[in-house]
Length: 96
Image (cartoon, rainbow, N blue to C red; front, top):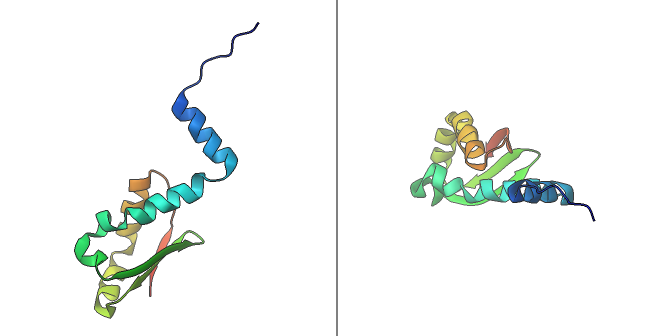
């Protein structure tokens, strides 16, 4: 009988998620869920819809004034959101 080398559980789970193809959708979901924590409840109350398309976070806002303010903070928001997830999931944000 042979012995298998023990493997770290965290590493095994990460490999399985990557192999099964659900690692990226899981990270995308975590990024969307972290939106309220990054922007705050005040801005989040004007957010109507969030989804990711081609590494771009699409954010529907109910306030045109807020849309123009957040456009100026895009790069900082992208960095904070990616940092929360721990990898580069999005490269841009579009407000509509």
